[in-house]
Image (cartoon, rainbow over all chains, first blue to last red; front, side):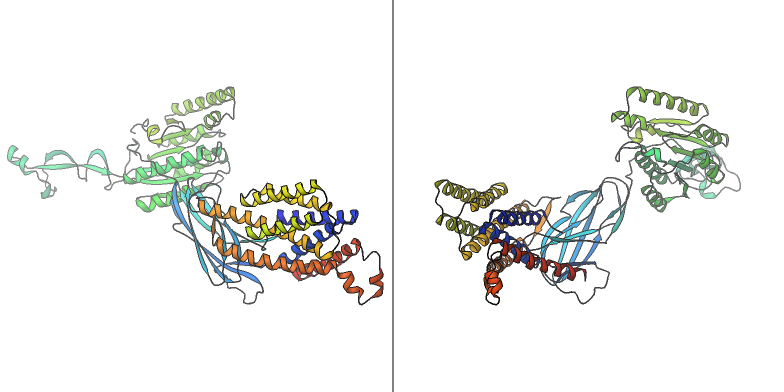
Length: 432
Length: 182
């Protein structure tokens, strides 16, 4: 392909040739002859570019080519939002030499922190060059780095050969976890084995609850000897029962949850809130499950510990706004499989879904404890000036009617503004 | 590179001024020289381009007939344009390399690239001079073997040069496109 300089010289040469012919001027024709000769001879210095991924076995015979093998490695394949990845691009020049321009294509949402992904270097035969740069990833989701674009010009920069090498590296950015101090949500039917939550009932645990008289089946180590000395009766220490709650989080990932901007939309904020909630509940040793609904229902079964946190964060990183499944359909699918009387938290904008009130009634009727954390997309659009004040007020009024109806059914509704941290919004929830 | 470009510029202007009979043309060529030198030294591309245009237009008013002089001026002009532009281009790359900003283009091994450029470009300019001289004198050379060519009025004028250019370069590019597809 010709560069701008090459095209300019060709046009100039043609213009001089025509001008010289018309005006019968030797020098103009000689100048066009010199230009055409120069262009022709310069293009002979152009070498073919052959660039291949590292893993492909190269062909042996290639004449007059710059033969480059390329590979890429990342410091990490999973990071949290605002985390950094170090990228190392290795080029091995097997044959030929030339001044090569290299560009490693980055996703649009990623920022260069250190170094550069665009290089120009002189490749000598048999040399290995390593290029390092660091990128910062502010938004969650799966991202791909690649392909690698190479460009070789002739000596004078009149024409070039470009090639894209299909080397891709993918990495996952998980949502960042906001620290939550307290969320007063738990199941009223906790599981009957030790955990970290005290529920004001006597039973197996570590915290002192009360004293009572000794009965023959009590273990001797529980006898409070100081109380025996004071009262003359055998008394035992009773501990407070600790138990685990089951929490189910339902995240709305339908198309309309992506309304707003790429860095400010209900889906992104809800995913971050989900990550914060999951981290908090799992630290409290509760059992947490995740349900994401878009065009289908995606379930992460209940579990505890760091493994469960990683599973849920990975699932959250892959959410995409698509589909329009109603909440009622989700409730019909999951309710039979959720532990009875456990807590359900729904994170949804509640937009474009007429089945929300019925779904909430069904949840409450089955004796679950429902908390709805809802962000209004209209407020985001109104802040950005995308909708008029009148439209915003109408939408807001309709939304308030819906939220009031849900409150009347017994659900705890938290109106969440994008400018408020999720920890502050959650302080509104009360103990069930 | 700068030195080569400047020498080429001085050579063109000197050759043109030898046959220059008008003071206006003298002033024009000296101005072009000044503009070109400033453009190369300060890496100002527009001044350099304007100087090339001025010299190119000034060529129209010159009165030169000897083919070797004509070929020399043409090739000197090409070398002035090429090395002047190369100087500006590598100076800009050097400035980018020294700035070393994150997110910009990183340049490595610039000196090796510059040396390779000067070497190859000089070779190409030399071959350009030989080819230009050959094309300008092709009628005379082929006239030795054929009386018809030697006596042809069209081939002995500028039209002859244009015809030879069209044939030679046409055949070359046709062969290259066939080779690249094959």
